[in-house]
Length: 263
Image 1 (cartoon, rainbow, N blue to C red):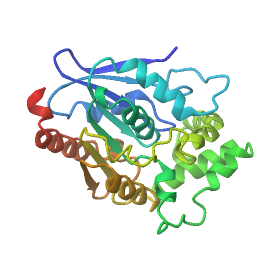
Image 2 (image 1 turned 60 degrees about the vertical axis):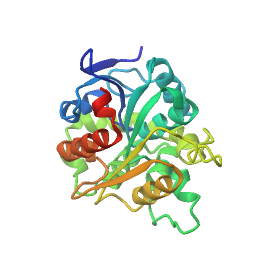
Image 3 (image 1 turned 120 degrees about the vertical axis):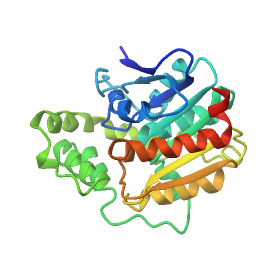
């Protein structure tokens, strides 16, 4: 059973919101309330996140989430995603452009795009949390993953229940790699992004690890109608830590693309 929640209401701009790995749908509340025009938005908890149960087995989590998105988007909609949720949304959008009004990708963790750039070199330690998860060292993987995404945050300061939940969720991390690292969705197929007509907004945090600016650069060079915005002072968790600035960037883009008027 996939848990869902709504933001805004009928008459608003049809929208779907997809959270990050280790996140949940409720994390969108502060930012969703600041979007103008008003949204008629659906958000859901990915498998093993929030109130959605942990699946018995997932081979490709990006494919699984993209299939869920396919069932939720019943009309042309604004799609907003963060991190792993952003890449899952991108997978759906690129193969279903007719159901997309606009695509907002916040810190998309599409590692394959960065690796396809010969100029990009991963930093030492970037993959440590993935190696720990593959080896079953889930608590170590959770700590490293948490610190990698925002070194300013203290893992030990989290409540014990939150640390335990994140540790349990790390068993899903290897299932993110087929889509995020190996490009199982074939999103880098020549012409696919270049031929995508709906407008795209790429949002990054100025304090994010170097991996994410490299991804945003790579995507920005492929999409035909893409705007890049960097939120000063923000890290990878920008829609949570800088909800107002993130919403302002989206609102400006909605006005400039005409989606605000259409709504």
